[in-house]
Length: 488
Image (cartoon, rainbow, N blue to C red; front, side):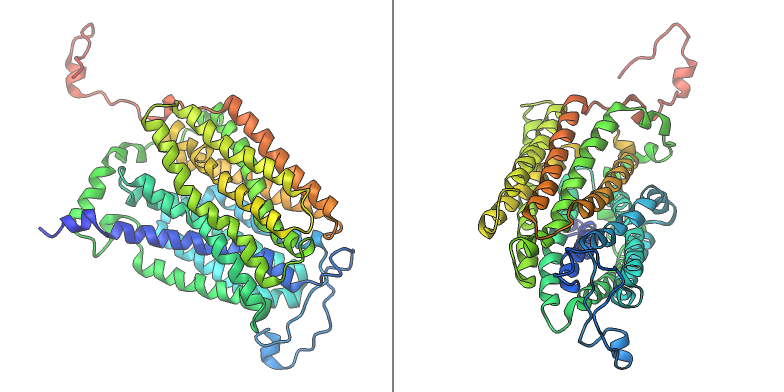
């Protein structure tokens, strides 16, 4: 039989896993590039004042190519820091709107259609962004970001659904860690690439065109190469398909269960997860969206180096992601701590060092080496929380983990969008280190407070409503009422 190599080596389940990884990586690259792009496309001297957001430098359109912003010179915009943060935050408005419905779309239409459609929408909004910025100012720019958010809202539910169909139980941890590593690696790829493109003849419009083209190409890859289930894949071997289906056979009953919304929303463990998720997202948005502006205005880093230095901490985060997940698994396997206490330890290892690092960063002035070292340490530790509250949904209700994740992800991204608006109100002068200190202290406080709540109320005890009701067999019904069925 030629099936054995498919089971031990590279199989079509790994191909699907790689496609999911690329999807998440490109999505996060597109999401994170806006911080560097705004540094390149705005007047530095006007960031500190309240100049009208619609003012654009004198820019003469010469012909069709200039109108489409395909050739230089490219305009720069007199957008205040507050307006810039609104443009960044507008992504989350679309992202929040479809967060929970996207899960139902994945089940109704399949992940192949959902993910390819999401990438096509992401591509269109990205390509149109430079034209929208010139012709419609920050308002049309924000609308493009809302559309991108709508598209990317479908990605995480699609990934969860696809992994549930393709990842065998005994490989799920490794495959999930690889796929979700695309978040950190997407930022690593997106920030420096954006910096290099902005400093090249393509200018800042080239950033959005580059990611628009990549997203569109990936959409076609998903359309032609992805499959919703192993049974729908045209090239998978019978051995690999049977192996995956046999591994996932235990979840057949759960698929027919209705979602117990009332019991989920009344479970106290969910709210501990939500609070922890809010703290992580607030800190993550601060680090990924505000640090490029901090590097530019406080550290005086040029645009190419800005993207590279802003990405380095996330590269370390990608590496330490695997380290912390292995350590926490070993603690559980060797029964050093209970699952609940292991989740709390992992969350604390992510949050407390991040809080301390942000406080320290607030006192660094004009020392790029110290600032970069602190950022690397923050990101290296904060990813530990992915082995904590981030997978706590699966502990409580593995059959409804996707639904619980969509709830906590929705609320946390509402907080992430608010964090950007708050930063815009605080940072009235982007060159003032004292105002940056307030932003870092606020994020540190969020890490510390939300971690404290999770330590007190977090739990990993499986909910009784997770499992389907036991079916009474004909043999059990035929037994006398006073006779208990024998256990085997």
